Image (cartoon, rainbow, N blue to C red; front, side, top):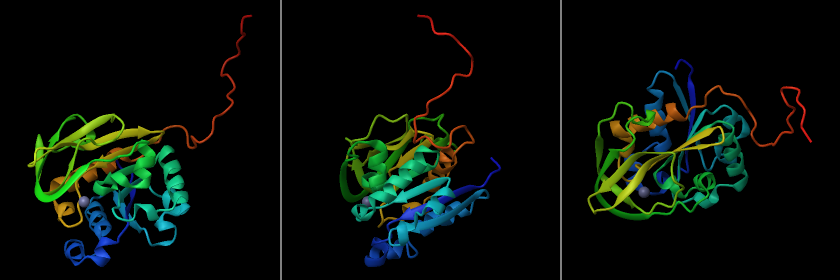
Length: 248
Ligand code: ZN
């Protein structure tokens, strides 16, 4: 994989500005931390975009130059303009990868791509999560053991209202007894979508090597391939490749 993968890390970037506890963990914002560890890789060029930038930082030009979009949002999902959601959706259907993290399950773009409520159970008790690899052949599980643990998390529990995934790469267990499909992969048009559960704003989860490894693997998996078709928004009247006759 010689080509550089161009990543845009999107963050609503509100908690970090108003909540000291969050700013202590992510002083430059969650997006900056994610871009930082991705940029430590040789063939990834990661930039950032945030809600309060013009067009939420997701202009036509930015999206045209993005291979994989990473999405973190929580309390301001409703402030994301529908026009931008339309634009991002079309870009995904034409090949851009989307990696949605944690509370992004309720983002407009993830719900748009899933077509379901994407609701779940939650509890903020700081308990332990064990993420089991439940699709060991999937590229996103590359280099991992049978499971890894995150010491302190916000719990997300089933039922997670998503369509049946193409692949469930991770399934989590929590100390409180719940389980959750915590890493799920989809194809949408020419694009690939991966939802990954970890990432609460008050825990240093995006500093954990296994979490970084999964996001890195997800970026590589979701990157577009040089296949046919560049605009899937239209249905074409298509001339036959061979001459043929239709019998009466
Ligand atoms: Zn959270």
